[in-house]
Length: 84
Image (cartoon, rainbow, N blue to C red):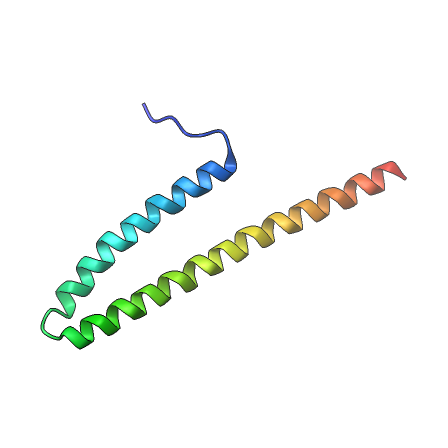
């Protein structure tokens, strides 16, 4: 039986860790297969793969936090209006 943490922060961290581990496992194997004959191409592909990972995860973090900020702002505005 799978037990999920109740904390949203813990769920996000666990999901990030799991997806990151899968990305590293599969993308490293793919890069190794595609560029096995050229060490310099392998190094470049690994570097680009790392940059893509950083860019995608940074974008996802931004979108997630931005969504939360908008939701929080809407709740604060709704609360302020209800107190008037």
